[in-house]
Length: 350
Image 1: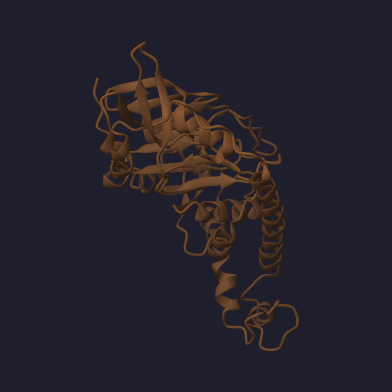
Image 2: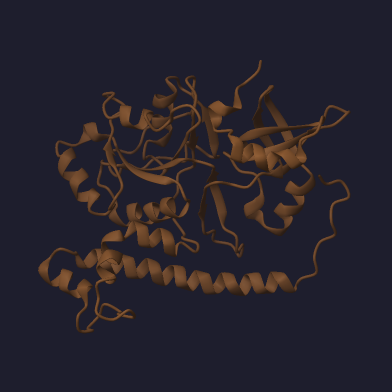
């Protein structure tokens, strides 16, 4: 069975990156799922399993963020003994990266090469403003276009009011109320997953990501579980990142539920997620205004007239402090890593 990779987003940019490695025993493919040391990859010839080798193994040892992830375009090598190895991860166009709790300075790549990131937040029992802000910062920093999807809209009689409230936390981001149970609000999402385009789903457990993936695929492709009525929380139904190809072309990247959202060097993403604050800040009299008590502070003026809520500014400041602290820690880790002797090169690399 052959597959047209252009339906998954293979284009001249990726083809150009692949050409230096193009030879009779090589093939390009896209990672559907990455397990420890083994990936499921879709190629023009079909689905295959590949162990890590060559540059992929070497680069992953130096930088875990370079290990293959669902959504990556990669170079495969077919060996005479019928083994297939994943030799190289091609340059990513976009990537969702969150900070990890360990000492890894590179963070964890949640998904790669998506065109749109859907931040999925359930209406029931109540949306979490702080989580939405964090996830939107992560989405903006990825380089993809974010949308905010409000799931389970059938559980509220005030959907429009909730959507308007959350739109204030998401300047410049479409807010899409959706009910899979009633089949409403899905078409705007389907329009984002046309042939050649990829939609990533990002949110906590129980938010309805897998249910959305099944609805977009038109068939049950991901397991789902009921959430608790009291708090709307669910178990980690999706335990791995998975690229789901759609019958009409395009793909959906379903990610595991995220309990904590650590930000990693996301100053640009934060500024776009808080565009209402940053747009005010550029109108302050002083370029180095701290937005506390300086004269001519446009941010303080907006707080005074009620056009900016104190909670919004407090959240912006908190996240920027968090990113600044992590940035300093990361610089120390990278400096320590550079002082270590390099690993010997692989004897069998592309």
